[in-house]
Length: 173
Image 1 (tube, rainbow, N blue to C red):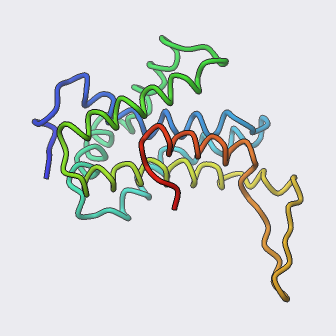
Image 2: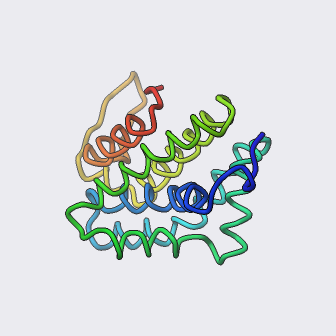
């Protein structure tokens, strides 16, 4: 079990901002204006909602508590985006942050705790990708007997999520 005290200020900033960086990256890859708007409004609630899936992970809960205390935590990610990146290298910035967090977690966190943190971040990206349902426009329907499965996540969003998993060192499930 690790807490904020186990990390430097810079490391903690990476841990706090990563959920928002990933959410912003996924929402930016393939959404139109309306999709980005829907996904942007769903980002902060999604971060808090997905954290409830990991109630025993004290690192995730500490990050969420810190974000709630600072008005949602989104500001740190926005600051990092605005200071360090323009639209064309948001991907690079996000994936760099993913690799950095993976490195931090490997050094300072327990393996199970680190894996859950990574899964939480990916779950945020998945929820954001599903928020607008823009993948529906691709009309990727597959019939399974009487059921039809409709993709809600676009191909570009899937690629972004794959890149995030890879940068975090999290295998595909």
